[in-house]
Image (cartoon, rainbow, N blue to C red):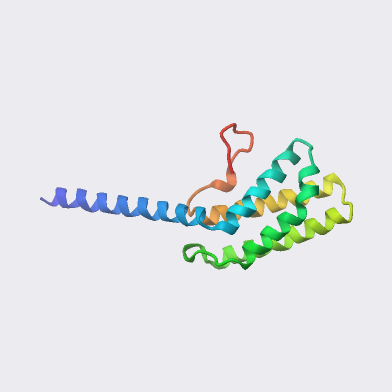
Amino acid sequence: MKIQTLKVFIAILFMAGLAATANAQLSMENWTELKNFHKVMAQTFHPTEEGNFKPIRERSGELAENARLLADSKVPAEFNKPEMVKAIQELNAGSRNLDVMIKNKATDEEVGKSLSTLHDTFHKIVGLCQAGDSHEKHDHNDPNHKH
């Protein structure tokens, strides 16, 4: 009888863990401002990896605006921690700085370094949304990699 009770207890804990993980993922997917920032980040960052700086030079203002909207958004309760707030503030400030750099004719090297830092900060935010996940340590060369 005790073994059966233990098995039921373990099954309940396992299901509760799955539900919590699915709920966190669902909340992140429903965080419109994060999704909107991500879309522009992906469409501007990945071309720079191949030496194409045109997308970020044309859309740096859009990236900065999406970072501002993210900073002004309500962080979902399960992610609302000091580390998250700090990372979002860094993303917002860095995006504005990048936009100014581009308007002031920064070199591709300068733009690439700044954008790479922003990309790392974005992944820090995603990692904070996925507690226990090592998303920050992923491989961009993996053909299955998606943002």
